[in-house]
Image 1 (cartoon, rainbow, N blue to C red):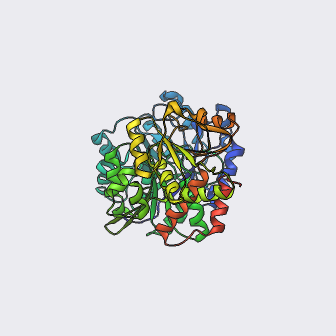
Image 2: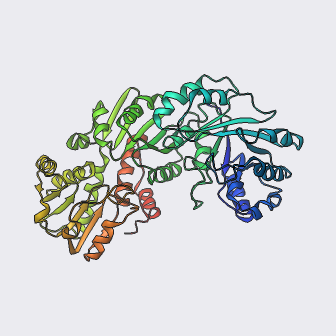
Image 3: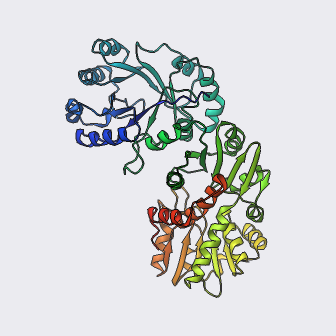
Length: 497
């Protein structure tokens, strides 16, 4: 890896001249070198006003992505030619032309003094032969070749890294989308890529055009420190995770240069590959979520007491060849149970826990450490009995379930695609009781709705997330965040009490 800083191209999200001009100014102030306008997302009337973008605070790239390659623009070559020719009448620095559809327009762009990005967005399985041909093709005069590939971590490690490492300088723009896209973009400088496409600055309030894109301001500070570490949250799914926002808030407050990205790992082999392949490439730590906490524990050579107690790890730290596992979930729920006790929300009969996985086991271990009685409910009777016995809890039965004053929901139900709960939630929630949900930002808020229907109070998992994140941050950086920084982030994620 070379460590040269790539130019940052920010893809703005606006669909009108007024909205985009504001985004251009913000992107430039946050470190953008160029700004990409996705005209396939604009109306025909809006595109006719493209000249009003000039003069611009940053050089502009005009893109009209086809539907075939993942955009909203026309596939028909004649319609594309009309649109792109009209855009080339304006002083764009670059015109993005698709290799499969727009090659005849390259001469037109050159005649008007507009440089060309010859782009290919791979959709579907990757053909390595075709990919190598695309990335080794001679670029247009004064322009660049860009190839974008959907990639899992295994594709990154098996195909893309060897391919890019074999390329001579100057290299083409090779980017990844999909599960491993954010990590690849963080590696852009170390891979010697000339450009990386980024999202608008963090906090702009809109989803990036491409979900693999990272905020320009985060990448700018990361690229400014060539040896800065990378961290990631791994699991399946992780796109919803607030962890990148939380850790970057603390890094910013502490003036620490680093990058924290989501990395979706859908198979056990990918999780094993992550632990094997990522530390030598600058990744210092991983937060681990469902379903890989048990495997993370197994893969570590050193384990904290909290990890040993639960045989689960949600935090891995890489130091040289050593892998250390910790379970910061356990300390997080211990802290929350102590707070709830002080608030009078832990009844004398203790608490009930719904689920038998990693979060449930952390909760049961925390209850035991605080000498609280606990009852655990799970879908499988043998599994429920096993987990209850391990933590000195009572194994609850669905048919005899009774309301509890404190219920901790510790399954993945609420996440998109998680399916129904299959357990009698409404029979477990007592009027006037309290429900703690490990899930936050639930797409399907069945737990919150059941709690409120029963007359109970409810909190989602954001507070627990911040508490465990603070401990992970301390493990990786050796210090902090301090109490004031934790309180600030709690407010930022919506925890007011």
